Image 1 (cartoon, rainbow, N blue to C red):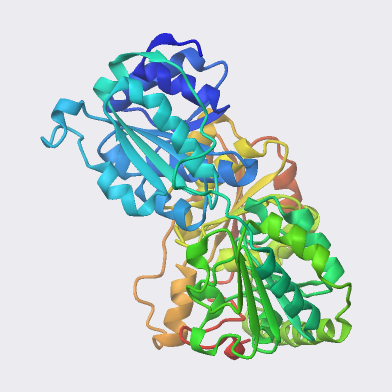
Image 2: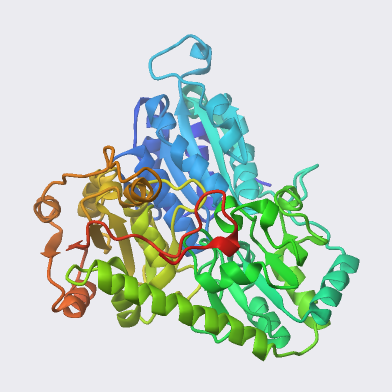
Length: 564
């Protein structure tokens, strides 16, 4: 292979080109200046999005990765620039999002001397990255970046961090680049046990009440079509975790709802009535299971996951299949018998009817005059045909969106699932639009979460990215207030919010904006926002004390899901 003399900083850029990187989210600073200087020669081929805070950069990269199926790339400088990535790294790790973060570091002779803007970001980020390393020599840069990309996107994806000292960036080396396709002792794709898949098929074929739970692992392995084939052949009802929304069309007759703490009534109670529970690409987190000692005890459990550490971690699996979801579903579809579970599906429909009727009565009693979050989400879902990319923050609006938006397209749901990071949505929506420029991107955010990263309106101003922003303003940190109402005797301790004039704020960033307070013309207002050319911020004043139901209180069983 031919090699060319280059600086370490130039080697970073050439390595990113070799990995076909087209977008970088970042913020320059002293220790990463040589890399930014090298980036200057690539402005016509690589789009750099200048954010307003490094946390914004990493959340934007997460949104980009989730909609584009590519690895998100982040640049940040040393010290506070690097530590500002920490929340995003933790978020990306728990939500299996592939990222390569490149941080500048002080020169190697200053390491450990408490130099200006020096911090041990490798040590700090070790437990919240899939892999990280520090590079102190220019000639080590290409191999480190090649390894970083391979690890980030293979197996169960996750974030990696490469910390490069300033002298390594200035150093001169012979550049050559080889993409990694394997790493010794790291098996990205497990060897599937056909015996275990056959055992799973036997359980499914003999089941009277099988029930399938799907997670984001379906989309990470591009198994959506394989899933559809398996579901339609086997006849099993399907429910989704929060991050799994979009993997299976919500308008399909076998889709029975959203799982977990604020999920639908039917899939929660039926979890404890099925005879075979099949979980694919999901990890049985506590929001899904409630009290694990009373979770699906009557059922045989089949668990399929690419991460061996998730198998038998929370819920014992009678048949554990360590496999990529796509490969497992492909084999499983051949082995299962063609069936229809009509009576079993009807039980889900009957339970859904109970939920709908109960919630309608509660809504009339509690908030007859005020706009409710679910009204907004239902109309948005209708006018976008469930095909927009919807990015949510964390809180009541997130659960309402998960419950009432009809996700009919894959890669259309971007949210912070495991870490629950408030402030995620605005920067993630920016990244999501760069990842899927052909799709409408709508960020749905509460008044609290919006104020955590609102400086990224400046990123929208400068990049001219087309993002629609809906602030559902209930003048509270709504989910915390709901818990205070239900479990802390309505002692609203520091949850009431006084917010700025969001419309004036948006207009200060040259973003068109309006405020909506009356129920009339809600649909027309949302249509106007979607049809607007360019970004638009719509503040909708919603009921102050609306609660999200159903709800499984902490420590309760999924069978004890409350409807009011």
